[in-house]
Length: 87
Image (cartoon, rainbow, N blue to C red):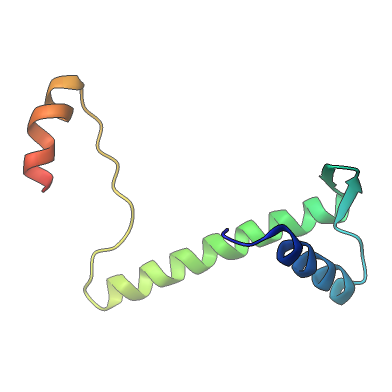
């Protein structure tokens, strides 16, 4: 995430203060999510996925093709044929 450890800790502490609940258990160098932290994480993942879908829908509405395309192939086409075609 390109954030230093102190910055990340400050964000987590700020979020914990705002929510009024501990999200992470800090056990020395180990960090484990609390039950509330796991719950918050699941909701956060859903929010991020919904945001991504909303952006893709707007891109599509504007006539732009957006999204992720996965192409699978065997070694020869993947090494020698597809790179030139895609490029």
